[in-house]
Length: 108
Image 1: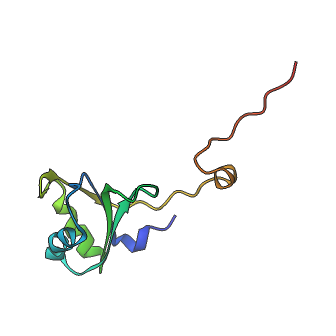
Image 2: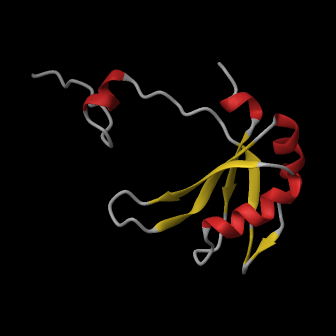
């Protein structure tokens, strides 16, 4: 399994709901070039969910930025970890997102 973007992508959680993309950019640019910031939003309501993905320019910069784990941003202590690859869903999950496949029941 390939590592996400060669180890350049970080997952940040426990972010204040009043934080904006620029707040994250200003904090992470202290460790290098921030290529992108993706703030996770609820697909139905569009509201920020308190987590984000940040892509740094190099794996070394991302590794250095891990030291921000436990740092206060606005009014909350953020958690910074290396992003994991997205898990692929099985065929049943692709056909019926959000539902678990049922086991066929035998008739008596």
